[in-house]
Length: 480
Image (cartoon, rainbow, N blue to C red; front, top):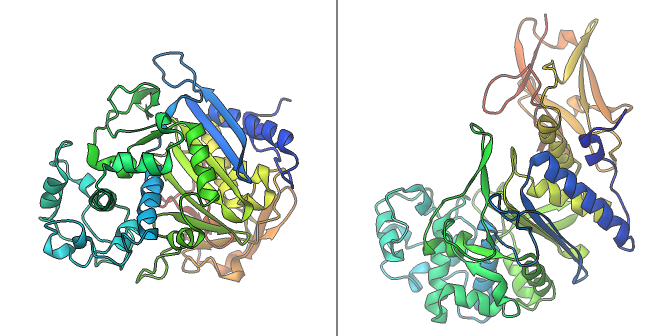
């Protein structure tokens, strides 16, 4: 019996040292090809930087679906919101030079700021804590509207929340970052970014937030149409005001070189970079975001990252001196960038592989690999006077970094820390928990989910029939 694509995809990829580069490259290449096959991705570019050297750089598929042109080192992928990283570095270069302060009010640099915006500071822009209305929500703002016209239109809207109290991702913030950079430097934003971050690769980057503009070697994403079962090319036109938020197209070599410069502190001094990566202090202490970057910690190893348009992502692991760049131009069902970075990082160093992300990739891929799976009850079974909850982690994968898997639901106030509902590891990577039926009320329907390592809420397989039909897609069970 031949193994399925999914079985091949999730075979163990683990290596423990950076001395096995050749073997790692083969495993990474095989993994990428399977992901592309499963998700029907037209074209992709992937690169890895280790110890300030490019250790992996490969291209796959075609740059367009209209021509057979292959993706190569000259292909400039639109990276959408990953552009914000370059805008962020550009702003912090000015902060390092003492020309801008995070605590400056934006009114210092921007004329005619609406009265409700007076308390917004530079730090609120990059932390998305400004509370400003997001221009992208308003269809009556023309693509060619000036920045002043955009601000005037937004001044008629209420603030989304009190500045500094919350996080809400917002394109207006980075329009204002661009305006500040231009006011301070006297340069066009695009020229400033290229001159200060891409002077050695200026012909490998271009700014445009116009998806239909004809630009040589630029790759624009495709959006899968579930009605026609074909890809449609993106046609969004958002104007120059979006350049600092989503306008950059870049080749893989240029992106990798940018990453090396970042790691070598060619752009920012260590103290400035530390400030950029410092978590912002929101009034809501549960929010975790830095001054412009997402951050994560797994196995006490920190990483900083961002993604754009669901077709690009960058993640750097400073303590491991490693970074991964991923760019592609479409996907059939679900975005794959963070799952791929997780797997690729795990191939390079098994301590970086988050088992929750691995499990999510497996679950989401299953619908594409085996679309005709029989619909069935998932997550529990009853035997005599007991109800047995059961969750299977992908077979042949290491469970080394799974600290716990728990059941949480309407019966315990959805508390993943409730140790009463921690599951036990059995054979074949299966976690189970046996509870007496008498613990539950007969005839009542309960909702539940599985949670890994306390904060990883596991998705429900597409073929599960015991779901509650809500947006959360909770599992259900009842006792007869």
